[in-house]
Length: 89
Ligand SMILES: [Zn+2]
Image (cartoon, rainbow, N blue to C red; front, side):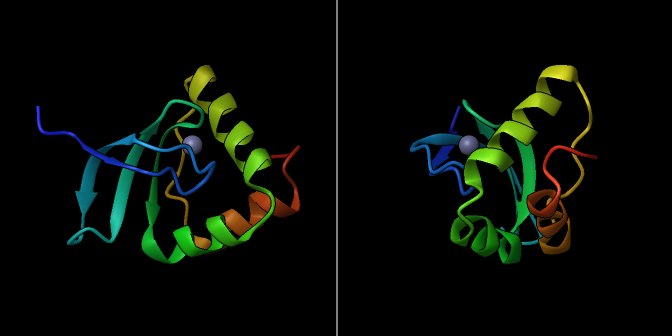
């Protein structure tokens, strides 16, 4: 199919699949080899890229994907929460 490829905004892995785009591309669902599947709005991508917690975020996402736990929309405030307390939730 016509899969788009883009750098993962969480772990910076190149050429990761985009599964879906909503709201005119504002909310993008990625399928990253490292992080798994997640949906992130553009406002939160900026935060994910700026933080030096990307390894923790990536691990947090991967863990939930492996366990089959549904990952909520990664809004800016949600990301801040995960970054503050990565071992909880
Ligand atoms: Zn990733």
